[in-house]
Length: 607
Image (cartoon, rainbow, N blue to C red; front, side):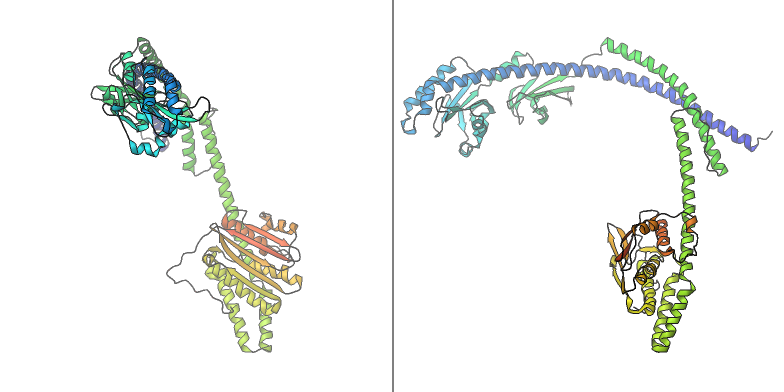
């Protein structure tokens, strides 16, 4: 028995439906597989994470311990430097005038410093400088000076700016270096007279390498290194210097994972507060195991997620797959029947229902757009028919021919010929080969021909002016949007005023938009008249009116511009009663392309 087209279509839809369900089952099994894989990866990750967390906690504790110990030691040496500053022999050396300083006085000051340093072995050298540059020191032969840097004086600016407080630096701000060995930690401070508070000198105390080494050894951890802010080695394991990073110049401990020849390692570092010292430590991440508690939690989560996956698959099939299938089938039916109708197949108030409502809203919007396009096309056609009707009214042709007849009797055949040429040019441009849109320069020619014919009738009471920007001439606009405005200016503005009038047409570009204004010096308009003209007309008001006082040329042109631009705010009317009226159009640019110079040449023999 053969299958009917309807049955075949139903079976095909069922296949699609069941295919989606089968795909959903496959997705559920895939999810379970992914979950198991993720479980194994998570076991490895948590194991690694636990090792990293332990290493970070141990590094934090180790670095903070070393940092606090060094800070405590340095604070003790700061107090020792204070005692040296207050020693009577040092004070006498600093207070004495330059001519009174003797070698005996220097030796006494040096002995006074040695007496104070007897309490410790970790001070390698002390330098006490007078303001005139003279100084005394201990262990002077173990150091050499960077004379050029000392002469500049900027090396001690931070010490002098601290106003007596201790400043920690490396190698006395890279000015005084050991002849043998590496860099040393320097405590510097300015010395002020206790009575006059005037600065009398400066003290530099270089600490021995053992200060830093002792604190490292006290932790019983060999994976520690101390550097300066530029990464230069000072103490500890020199192999860790290669892991130095500018990120470690922070009082907060920074952790970084690196790959080394021995495997993954955690590098931690921080800066000792208020000191140019960075502590770096390293920990191996290849050893360790995951805690039992974490493993039990992961297994429980695995079983829970598998059950949830099966439940989610059933829920999705029942609440998503089937409603989506029904909604899709209704949409497809609309498409096949060529209808734009709302559907009503989903009875649930959720996202699927929102999808159906969105589709129905789209259908309503499309229907509204189609209706609007039809209405706009009707308005545009009626406006163009009205313009054509207005322009071919017999009275204009009769008046023009009558004027030409008067010229023939009074002036002779030359002026008759000129008038006929102007009239022919007007209608030639007016018809524009049936085009609905023409360049602005052709529209200007129509207006010029029209006003030339009107001047034959009204004489000197009518003057026209043009200010057309060169870059606007080729912009495409609807045909016959200026001539109705000019005619409106003559019959409803200048002629009613009973005196000489001027019509001025101006065009310009502003921010990529074309502006065209028509201004006349006629009787003007009231605000009520302006609002009446700008009010959007309905279809019944667009019917051809037999009322001669109705200014169709103005509001009909406005409606055509609105349809052309698909916007309402495209016209501005400014007026002052008894003075002027100005109508301005705002049109998006649509530049006419030229076809190899074969366009009809637009000209007016009357201008």
